[in-house]
Length: 228
Image (cartoon, rainbow, N blue to C red):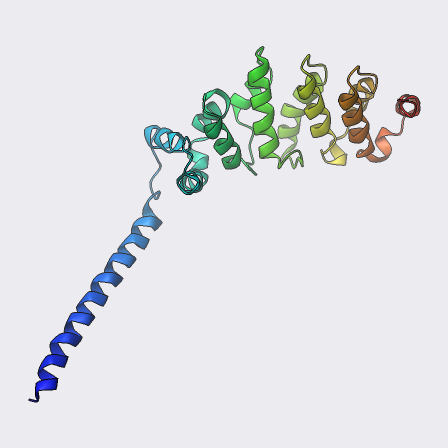
């Protein structure tokens, strides 16, 4: 055996061994990643992930958001509670991202929309907007519509200006088939609101509702607004 052969064979063996170790580590991490949430997470695990949102490290927050989206269906109550009650703005913002395109309205959110505390009503609205992609409502059932639309109509009379604006804007984005006379009348009433932004939101909402919104009352109020 030549000198070069004696040195080459062990060297090749070492390289092959190292490659095998690297591949084993990579494949193991992938497997672990794939099965990390194969089982239903505990409430404590969900709460720990929520607490990880409270960081200025964007990479760490994004990782936590991705994991929570993966297990969202198992932790809707905990997430809704955090989005409404957590003192950290970073956590509440993170929860809103997690709730994007959620196909259900959490009970906690429904209750918070009627909370006597303006702070909670605003937070509930922000979560609602995220669920419906900033107002582009796509109810997946008539029961969903029957639950939330009456609350939105009621909130058109809220004493907080921003809530009246968001409620009008949200109703203005619902599917045309869900528009009712009650919604039209409630929005028409807002055309006389003392706040200009509320009047503007109501006018825009009515403009999105097609022929159903073309009533004598609406036309009369809009005509008056031409001199606003």
